[in-house]
Amino acid sequence: MPDQKTIKVTQTGSPIGRRHDQRETLVGLGLNKRHRSKVLKDTPEVRGMIGKVQHLVRVEDAK
Image (cartoon, rainbow, N blue to C red; front, side, top):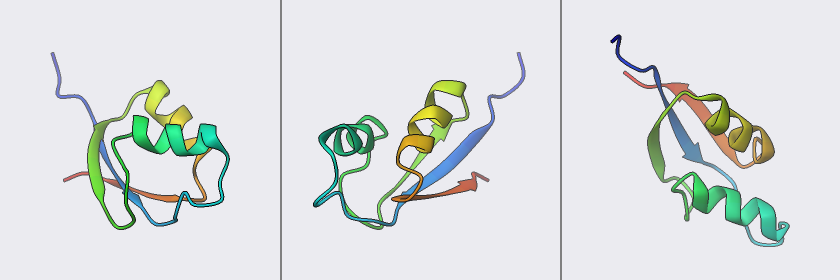
């Protein structure tokens, strides 16, 4: 089985003043404070979550 592709997601924006579902999406991605990063599997589910909060995160390929 080949290695799963991974992506690095970094929170760049604050959830203050955002809708509740956007805050919950950040928590679901494992992010809770600005400038924190997580390495996640590149799946359609994760991409959908990133799309919902794309204005609050930065996405890069994980090494």
